[in-house]
Length: 354
Image 1 (cartoon, helix red, strand yellow):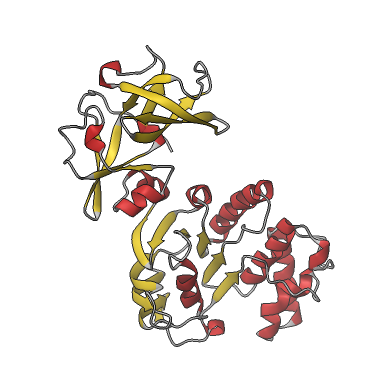
Image 2 (tube, rainbow, N blue to C red; image 1 turned 120 degrees about the horizontal axis):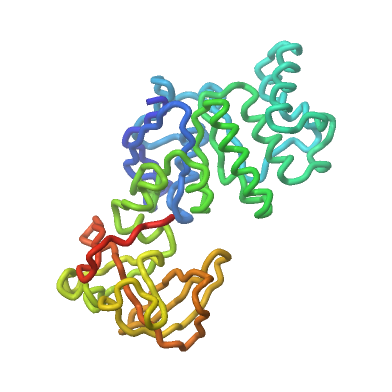
């Protein structure tokens, strides 16, 4: 593995551990999305990798070398901050050249590397401008170029698109994925945006309360969550405290247990629309949410409120309408694990679509 983290721990003061016995490995050239709720330990883990915080225990290895005691500048790390952190008194050229200048590289080497990165990041012709003369997207590209200039072993990005508007953010996500693939540099980026992680990352690391809940490819994590937290955190899900009250699951789920249901697991429609009407039950529309490509329908049945995806080409529904509801599948929570359970009243599986 290019990056190895073994049993890493960090606690601030006498509080709850910020990073709690975390271990993982990353192959060279992979783009990793570090995802989790606020306070989950993402930024602390990133800062320990960078050498800006030191672990209480555990080990960090980069390319086989233990780096726990090394200063940040000795680790071969490139760091891109959320708010760019560009030097306002330096133009684009000098910002990109900064790390190479500190390393006292020859001017000819610096010039060649800066020209290369200007072309790579689409900034050619802007080298004499100052940060306040650039758009948000251009400033973030300068930050990327500056981090890449010293040819780091590992690129760390702390919510790199958070300060950029939605349209530019989407363009930069595509650009970043292509850039990382072209360069083959191992990269880890922190994000709160699930869509961003699913779209950009080769793998995701899901952290919660300082612990690593799951590591894997986005589709694997989405379709096969290993813990109740991951099942409820990824996607737009609802947790049910009495899933045995749903039709078809009365004999399949133990009383007193809970379950997690995603909108794509549920159909809600008018008479004659459902794929398996014999497995449905009556419900009431409580809310309608337009999601661009579909409607998200909140329905209530027997005290439970669920979300269901509804295609736009179906007849419109209104709040208060009586509809038929079919739960095709759900994640049954069993202690600290989950298992996917299909509705026993159905005979063919309901496909999962991300």
